[in-house]
Length: 201
Image (tube, rainbow, N blue to C red; front, top):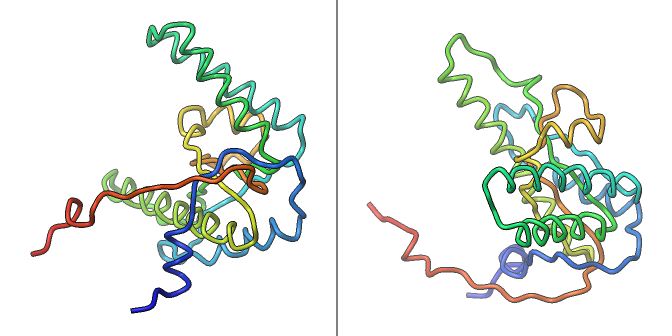
């Protein structure tokens, strides 16, 4: 059975972290974001929000501030200093070397509210899932436009830092960060066999 184009696209996607310095045209970024917002969402409330960072000064401030929090957290965990500095440096380089950074956020402003914590927690999880699906759309479309991309979860560990540096609206909650640019590397990947992750009943 011949593979469909979408299956090929999914299987050929790679998490690429090194990019050429060439800028990404605004029109291409907008095309990628437009694809992202066609993801399914809970109640069709579309809770995703996107902060797009292109300016070097903003990337430097964000990377430095996130690095400071990472250093503080790892120090409190008693991680050896050499390992801390290596982790901080790697995080900083990944952010500032990407031509474009897209911070994926969610907003609960249009989601339902309930009288009990259990259903409110479920509603929040639904918003998280919706935002993640928008991120997946973004990651799948980027390679079709000749771009590399990589999802970083670091904002989850310092959402207040991201909100402060980027001056985000009060209801925007950072969930992830996607680095984006024309790739300067190639990568291979493998997956565990399907039968090791599946139950049939």
